[in-house]
Length: 481
Image (cartoon, rainbow, N blue to C red):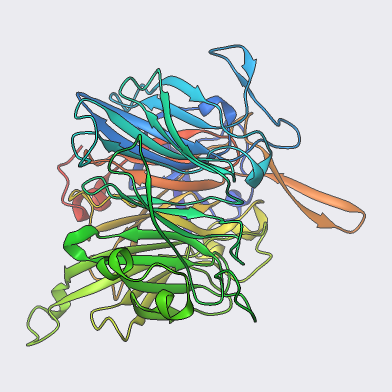
């Protein structure tokens, strides 16, 4: 397979190269791209990045970016704005001009390395949207390492103010916050539950006064239960009161489960975590292969499918895109992929298609680091929703998928950033020691209402802001650039 290598401006730098060339990235080489180009970048102080959330804040666009904990080599990178070593936390970046992102503030997280520190997850709501919020305020919900959830006032994104903390946990992760209701589905580790991660449902409509509604998880995870413990939660996505559904993803790279839950029953049903009460709001549960997990469960409901336009029934379908997470370096596990489930008949969800990057297109198992899917964009803004999806694929960068026919998703573009001096190594054990390689690890991706794509790197290479070009841009219905 041949691929063209593009400069940040989208110009062809040199002739197409074979996949053999792409086995190893080198500092100074250009990014690899097709139908996507680089608009701007920020090094994020060389911090390992997880979730980007892009918020339209007045006449500005602000990126709030969560970080993993530090590394063995650099447990607390130096913040050049303060001159102090700070545990990884939250980066706040003004991306109003995507070609010139401006770093505003680093908000330190919990001390600790890798998954034990940092502040991985972040969501943002306007106070005017929250039923009991300050209409002039903007609020950020973030995790604080594994021990707490925090709400900050980020009306001035350069000067955040802590409002409240929900503490006493043993883990946290990828939460969801409904801005129009204030209901939050917090991925937590309640100390008395038998699983590392479950759901704590809170009313955060008044950010200064959180009100707990209930704990929730799969039967067998609750306190006092016995037997095997079901796969732990990774994260939920809610369609709010209008859609009245919450889609929970359990597992990351094995034993995945898609759970479809009636939101109203979850909120108003019996709260005591008994097996019957935990089953009460469940509409359906779809187990996945032992080889694959459910990192992200992204709903696309009432989706028109052109292929079915002349059919009497089923012209539109309810689809959930499920993304696994690759965990092990250099293909040391089953391939983690993207799956599409048809949930039009909710009680009988069925898998209809899948997508993966062909390994041979870039010799990705030999490049170093993880190869496989991790996450998708989660914005439901009309610019891309039900048309395009963007998948973070670790050392294969970000992949743009045309999903207008979810039965036949098609890759229409990709972007693999160049490594820098900040890009961290990834190692595997070998006889007599370990083997380490340096490769991009595109970790998470998000989009904004303007159509820009934001990717962040797990291996400390920072933030890259992208836009579609050529046929991919046309497929999304965007004007020529």
